[in-house]
Length: 82
Image 1 (cartoon, rainbow, N blue to C red):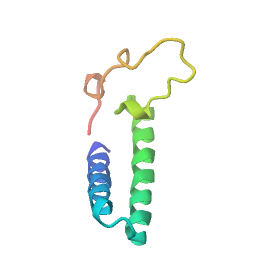
Image 2 (cartoon, rainbow, N blue to C red):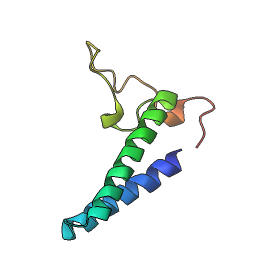
Image 3 (cartoon, one colour):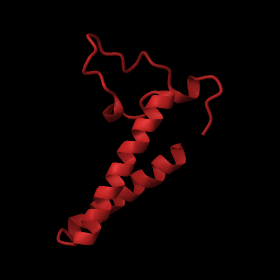
């Protein structure tokens, strides 16, 4: 799952660079939106299984204290694999 997140994240960054120089390319814009949605979905799935991978995949809206650093990192969980 981490490998796929890396691949999609790279593609999103690449599309951002492309769109910087080709802002009117409608196909590229649609493709970029699809990649962004896939990345969000993958990050959400990852967070549900292992905890948040990035700060933007946390949901602390219901919390009264900041818990980002209290969760174990993915490599600290027993039996976690890529």
